[in-house]
Length: 562
Image (cartoon, rainbow, N blue to C red; front, side, top):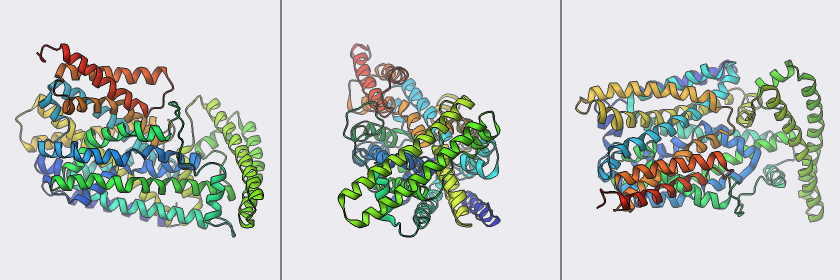
């Protein structure tokens, strides 16, 4: 990177940390540190809720998925608006009135201590792994820029978030969210503009979208009842509905955001903001990935977007095979580029027959390019032994670092890093809250001072930051990071949601029933995940149903019921 880009990167990072450290108002007591004394306006709390999700994973993993699959991923969010409405009239007022610090405190009041502890532990595991996936996204970028290994890069990214979260608490996190959200959206529009302006003369935005449509990348509805297909209309409206109800309704990283609002009505408004804006934002993100695909139709992309793997192949025993694939790739790219230009020209003729033929030709040429890329991916897997390798997380970083002008590179890397820092800070804060409130204060030091709990909370923030770094190194090679984080969550979220359904909807459910139901839900998901090809989104439904059914059956014979 140019020194101007480095200046932008260092300056923005220093400002974010400094401003976060200034936000220490009321952070000397646990109500201020964990809930900001319920003083956050609804719009800031709502932006914080969205910013916690719109992380570097979105800017890297989701855009990369848009490049490969197009709009298909948008189906994942079809159930979100309904989930937000349901939660705003059920769990939000319920938790806000209860005066809890964590969602899991209520489970002890309703059931018993073991159910609360087990549910909170599942949250800590799921969220701890997810924040590791969040760290890995910008670690991929900086490892390309700096030439560092992923471990060192992950530590460099996590530490600023740890510092201002340790001292500023949730108030620092929330107001930092607001600033970074503006930066993220500006960065997305800047990349879209760069991709469109990079198209050759005579190829406009409409032509680009027409080219993408010829490969099926603008298709956003799949009504097939295929439970092994990850993204269909049904998985997005039914299975994802369970995921969103659990994530936004029972995950401490989200519950804590709307508990900081100034009133119950403002807490509802903060959550409903995601119902209005989440899908448009995801469309924008996926559109960026699609336009980068179109950009590389007319500009030469690398055969493999991971430069580290490229170097390894060129210098290893498979060098001759890789060179041969590069030659094959160049020929396929030339044919695709010519087919893309012909398709754009056919759009201007208005002749449907000519247009249909041009679309078919382009789809065939694009399939040939993807076939060569598939051979290269297989070669990487064969030579490294890493059967999960994919370069989807390297597509947008490569575009930024090789195709954008000086200054804009620095701005976009700042957007990615700050998006990660923002999400990391929010999730570390929620992990620290659950650790201290649900475990340390309850089991070890129930009568200690606020100052003592705050010291422990800061230590817990640092510990979870180190845990996230360890997970980040592993998560970077597991595939699309947006899928990785949702795969982690789907393993736990259905069962957690099932416990809260038992607690709120079934008065006859007992603590023993809830606890055994929770174990049964986790066991059911583990069995399905290890023995079937059912898409992970459906794990949320399986976990929730198993918990409710087993919990009610056990409650019927539980002596506590009688």
